[in-house]
Image 1 (cartoon, rainbow over the protein chains, first blue to last red):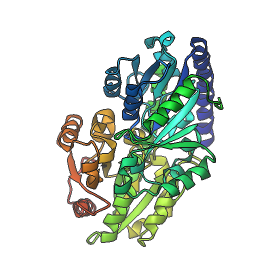
Image 2: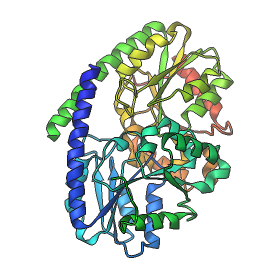
Image 3: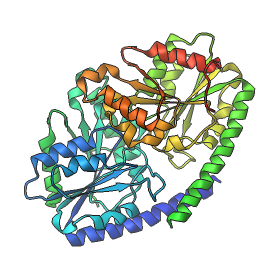
Image 4: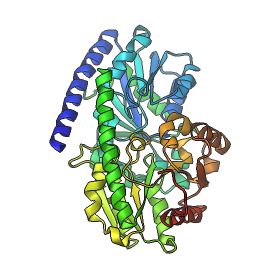
Length: 228
Length: 228
């Protein structure tokens, strides 16, 4: 039983990889760089995006694809910034999946004016397990990790922390109110993903948000060397 | 393609329900009440369990089954309390699943001395989506929700908030430091699961933890009427 389960899972991932490559080819043709933004539920992805995009990116036209099991709350928040936003729900038609996959993203592409976008941020479903297993055609994966979640998370969800080019440590304004040892966290992070870039931010106070903006600009302007 | 995906998913859930019923029959024969403890990553399930179990349950012998993708960090923390603890990893042999299912729990039963346990707490993998879909043979499902995650979570993950008998709102000590409106949260919660019991606690300060202990005692002593 286990062997056949693993076989099916591998077939699914192979099929996903094929569609992800097709998505990336479409993005490349349209000149769009794509970031897959991942985190646990409530780590602050949307508020962080609101902060970064409200301040604006230099010479970069952003767009957002919002992934949620259900609802369009986050898409509505971001649409207030007057940029192209599309909502992708995994609930109707996709069985309430806990992650985005390449096929779901492909189905949403027609809802976005790719020719008006330089940088597309795909906000994944809040989950520290499955999103790491499904490429969607992105150039880079950014993981947001909140200090409220505890400093043991890199050890407990290693695949997620390994499957990203940037780790954004959010809610740093809560540091003195939670049991979170930043040195211990960074030590754990370095064990599961040696040398990965990280930054410390607070979407609430704005601390460090400009550094994330700079990173996204560099990504869109192809100034970052990414391991695609 | 979608129709066959849904068909496969339904078959998986049917098979899971059958094994979950077998688990529950075994638990009933052994006189063990079982709670499935669910939350997002870092909501504080383990620290809450540590607090409750360290204070002790009246006339109730607890045991814990720890579910994690990888590692045994939480099991080691709880084993320090000198109670039966078993670790269940979804990574080796189960494909790194983002949730526990009935078959995984069944495979772990032999590692626990059921005859020495009145209340078994199964700590699920941190995830607000899939754990809600897989019964494991439990009598009750308890969901832990941290105020750091935001007051919109019941709307964004409705199945999880609907699939539980008790919602524990944790990290209430952070309330003044985060943008979390408790009234708004409770309004959202009531919309997705009208009348569900809830309690407000802080695993860090101990506030409200005795109420959770009382609830678990009542559960173990069959004083709660549960919708099994």
